[in-house]
Image (cartoon, rainbow, N blue to C red; front, side):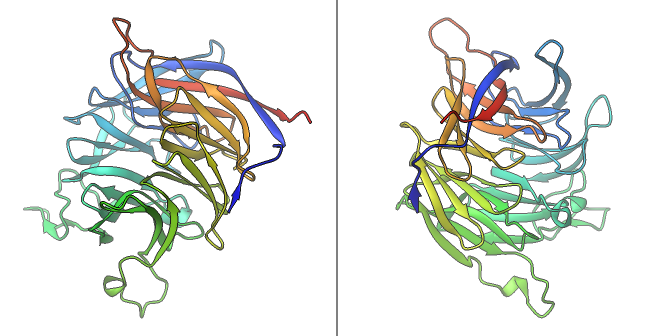
Length: 366
């Protein structure tokens, strides 16, 4: 592992910062659809909302309100291929799948009884029907979204009267006494799930890998070992993982205020760098994989060169709110969106919960 040092090859500056959303709400999650036309954000008012950017006025316009949850929405994720399909997770212990082709979005699938920490789609074409969910009870589950039918219980092998169908997870890993805060599918076919694993009471965190599918028909995945590999990673829980678009790098961020950059071919941490003082909430690679955005509890978003871990700039956010709980890059251009939580100071209301930064990238001056 190398501590980042030297000079970066690029530098990044913010050309404009757009704030949107209702001032008296907070947000914990943002997601672009794969064309970059819509940005969805989760809201504490029990909705998810969609906005589009107006390039002529440098503003954001709200287009849809997704309502139906009975608790604050904590996660929102657009499908990686289908423009009008989005997942939401809420404190009401449901995960809902929405179709946005109507002026009023419709729920087309649901899972119940989920105390969701994270939910992610498979990115590869062969995985785009699957989602991986981590829960507060230590479970990591894989579901096929084609099996999510409206108003069906999510407990495995539970039939719904009159339908003859049941919602069955493709695979469930029960990891207690280990806890998993986040998980994603591995690159190149997603044979493994990759997550941040913490031992309760010990604090140290590893990157864990679970094999959830196999091309070998003679392998019984139900009898496969639960946790296949552990890689020591952080001195505290890992709150965020992201893969570079080419799948060659993995970024990790956690409570120890450190960010790790890993070579996925050999699972070696090639670079590690520290943030000023506070824990890392979110890491995200740009669409070309060259820049990593790091969201923490400070009032800025750090930008680093993905190949070296060297700082290339930062996005300064408005005061009177918490830091960037989650960051997400536009899929085609250098724009970063972030979700922020409430932080009232005196009688003044905080700024809107969503910030969208347009960036300029130039060669670094030597």
